[in-house]
Length: 454
Image (tube, rainbow, N blue to C red):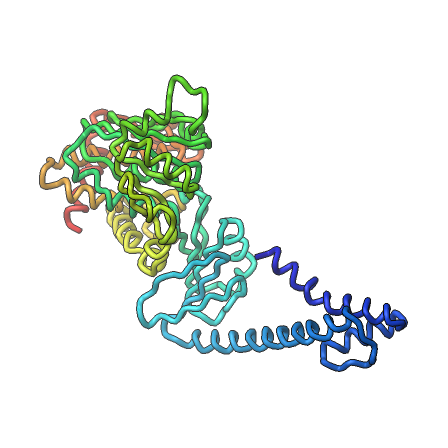
């Protein structure tokens, strides 16, 4: 799109240049040739000269003028329409450089102004293709967006490492995709404790599929889930080389499909998987190969839009996930039911333990911590009919430890009586549940009890 925008001025000058060349060939002076060629833009020929170049310019120059007039009229019309839309009780501007349409409730006036700010609407959703562009757009128009409802979709930055941005609600796109996926699969409802899962992909989505899965797929102390990560990108393994799992779960990493590997063959891993997740946009050839090598096992593949090649492959029972229509909704972006539950959870905790109660003053890390806990409450509720409270509290503690570990914390003993050191990212309670004090175990029980009351 940027390339075409830069190309437009050049295209507009083509008739002028070609026409001028035509007039020069017919014997006109340079200044007269340029003037005569310029006049063609307004269907006002000032010379009777004629040749192929002049004929070309005679037809294309007025088209350029007409296009410019229509674009100007459209711009004026858009601004009028946007002003009218801003008068609605619920008006939203969605800024994006991709073909994304957000699904809203009936009665919401929505406009898609591209990269042009429309200050008159009440809500602003920023969904550019990269975080740098989204945050740059916000910074550029920060003054106009003050006291407005602003929502920014993140694709690359980790929520737990972001400082608080006043007046802005952040929406983690990849985590939302992963969360929706695991809540549909619901491993905690399957009567199976030994599970092999293959996640294929080099994208950030593949990393989120693993990190969210580690926090949601907790249903027994005896479970043994092995996550087989097939990826040429080793960022996750490097960043989380000492990831704290605290039960029988495992993470195995494989360096993609490469010839010459003898100790860990990804193809063999596919055969023993219970199901395979393709968390990347891959070619049809790779997709077919994965389906065949998986031996007909259940295959899930990321597909932001419907109607791709995966819809036509029967082998392996492929099933798409992560469609834009499912992820980019008013419920996920603005209403954020999960966030509201996390806010209520934080308020209950703050009231009892005298911590920060104002959600807007929490760091990105603490917000993410509360969201992770609120997300896991569905699992706790569904396990409560067959599991005693103490075991549920232990699962909650394991989830808490995994969340902290995924956010680069480790077990350590701060100086004095402090339980944690935020600067060094160490926490005294990142130990087995049995090693906690009775006071700390009671906090996990309270989370379980709060979940039961929802």
